[in-house]
Structure formats: structure tokens, C-alpha cells
Image (cartoon, rainbow, N blue to C red; front, side, top):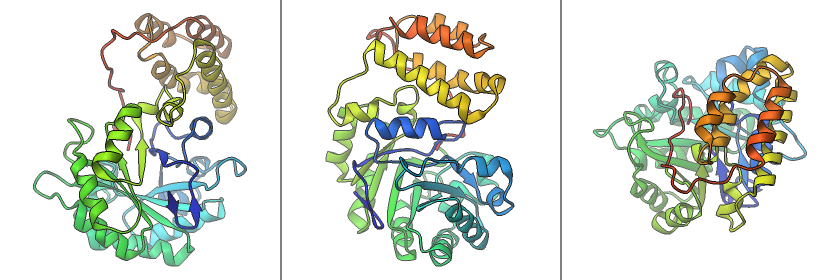
Length: 334
């Protein structure tokens, strides 16, 4: 799949996810497992324009392994978004993705995220302003619409294409649905049939069969995987026809992610605390996960985490009888 001048090695993408789901260590992990592109989480344009230290941390990346480096921005003002895109470009961004899908009220109340679906003219102005300010390829991530009475994904996508967007990711739920219910893949198909730029499908892809079915039913050019990748970066390899992880590989992968997360955070106590959620995700679907989760929430030191990972993941096998678990989020996952 082509995005601007960049040909991705595979048509699989990691969805931008807040709360650590798209931080540097995990992005590198999924890229090694076969993802063709892994964007940052949604980054505030105001934080970038003001060059806030906390916001700039989201743009830390590995230029040797993240090629191209994609930054997702959210904001509602075209000129402020253009200024933020310039800062992102200075920090190494090669692609700018505009978040037009986040349903979280703290994002939409400021006219950002999926609120832009209700104002296509302003959304188009954002794409144009970024293109003119940076000359970087601009992609957008959209939803079906604001609610069931305003399903405007097709005309909206056409307007983004005219404004200069070079790829469009479609999460076929409305803002009102947030992450509940089933995504309507027919919306992805309708957008694909309407526009000429690449279309990326997103929503309810849990494995190889889902990805193949999405491509077959919609004709989309790429598949974006979000919550299903949390705790299972190997999903990208499996979608491409590779094997599921062995116990030894799972243990080594979780341990490596933890060590790289500690280095990324730079402070052991905060690193242990912020790794608890990824650790719970890694245990999902494995035998003994419920007991392990109780233990994981009590871990306080890096050595305790290392020992817990070694004990549990060295022997934990998939529990085929376990019900499909939904990832618990704070509403910040795109």
C-alpha cells in the first residue's frame, strides 16, 4: 500500500491508541511482527504548538526502524493544526495523520476528533492547511458519522480527498456508538468505491480470518488493528500467515517490552505502575489469567515484575474455553 511517496512493506497498520497503546516500545514491537505502519497516539496540537515537554515526549521515535514515522494530531483550528504539523515535522514526522474519529468528550467538546465529522468544511481546511504548511502526506481517520441520523462517511471522505488527503482510514461506528456494538463494514466498502486514494479498514479485526474477510467484503487497501493488538503484537505476524507465539517467545516478548518501557519512562516506580495495564492485556486469553491479574496489580518493583513475568508466561498456554474478553479502556482508544 502506498501513502504519499512511501510504500508500506505490508498493508497492516497499528491503530493510534492513547494510554500507552502506541508508545515507542510497542510500536517497534508490532513493526517487527509485520505491521507496515505504526502511528503515535493522538497528540494535542496545542501541546505541540506550545512545545510542552510532556507532549513532545509522544514524538520520541527510532528513525532507523520507524520509516516512515507517522504522527497523529488532534485539534480543531486549521492554522493551529498547521503550526503543530510543522513542529512534528521538525521532530522527524514524515506523515501527518489527522484524528477525525476520537469520540471522547474531552476531545470532541473542543471541536476535535469526531466532532469534525459534523463540520466537513473545517475538517477539509485542516487537511489543506497542513499540506500547505509542511508538504507532508496527510492521512485522516474518520468514522461513519456523528450518529445514526448523520451517516456521512462517503461525502466526508470525498471532501477530504479533494482537500489533499492521500489515504483515509475508516472506523465504521458512529461517534454515538463509541466502541460499542458491531462495526458496519459496508461503510468501508462504500468509501472505497467512492474515492481514489487508499482506504484502510478498521474495526472488529481479531485475527487472520477477520482481516481476510474485511479485505474480501470491502476491497480496502489496508487493515488497521487496534485493541486486538494490545497484549498480542504477534497478531500482525499471524495475519500474514505466521505462527502464534510459543510460551518461550511470549515470555521473552513481554519481558523485552517491559525493559524497553522502563527505559522509555525513565523512572522505575512510574514505569512499573504504567506497565500494569499492558501486563494485564498480555495475560488475556491465557490459562490462569484471572489469578495473575490479581497479582499483577500488586507489583511494585521492577524485579517483582520480572519474576512475575518469568513465572506466568513461561508456562501459560492459551485457554481455548475462555470467553472473548473486551479490552477495558478509559475511552481514549481510537
